[in-house]
Image (cartoon, rainbow, N blue to C red):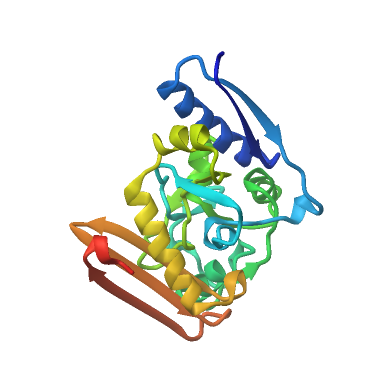
Length: 251
């Protein structure tokens, strides 16, 4: 019997693109695999946001696998190529993230940072409508949607530390479903797993979830390098910290 797999995902363009990416990789390692992508809709889905930093709390009846991580950085997108140096007083920048807001204002106190919700395409349409001079989005989302016709400037993690787990995809399957777990294990990335788990562990100690302007990025460079930021929402007080250690003993 030909093996089959049903992959559940949200219905946004980015979620579907991410599901397609996973399905393609699984078909590559398991030729002949039949797949079906199932859109899962939840109450209030339009306003639903959940990232790796808060979604996988270890209390669900699932086992996790972490796929290769995309670019974890944030990107500044404008109608022309812009860097932080171009963001003068009164420039309107759209983002709904307190983490991004705080770090932007700490660098450029005169900015007008305006709340901007919606998926990546919605945010870009608002930019095109002249509602904003620039928007900040996850570089991974741009890449996974193959949006390469925009003026996007990746922001250094030293000035815009990303959210824990940003750029990583987590795959969940039922505990005990060994055929599926074995299949997902083939695309599990141990390095991405270690770094995202380190970021999430630090985030758990800080607490507050998305209501706290907190960012963390771990990278494996010989050992593990962990950068973190914690700020007030207006960016008036900001703490940046960095530590290095044995990647196998990050806990």
